[in-house]
Image (tube, rainbow, N blue to C red; front, side, top):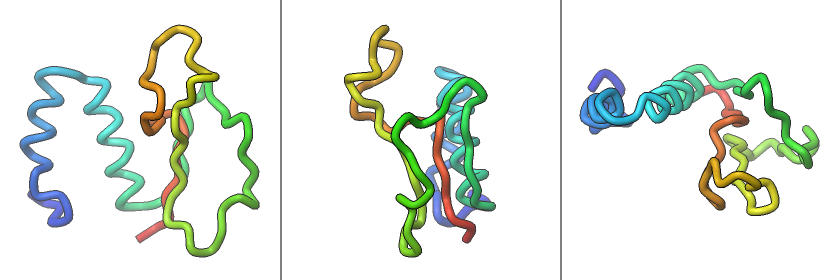
Length: 91
C-alpha cells in the first residue's frame, strides 16, 4: 500500500469497488481528510446541535453518530459513525 498506516487498503478498496460504490466514496472522503485535514459536509446536511466551541485543542477529529431520533426512514444505521459531516486536524 502507498499509505503505510493502512496496509489492508488495497484489499478493502478492491472489495468496495465490486460491492458498494457508496462505501468506496466514504472511504475516499476519510482518506483525503486523513492526509490533509479539514471538514466535510454533504450539501444537504448540517449538524443540529454543534457549536465550534465544542472542539478543544486536544481534539484530533470530530465525527457525528447517527441517533435514533433522526432515523425516520431507516436509511442509515443508528449509532453508526455518520459520513455526512466530519472533520479532522491536519497531520
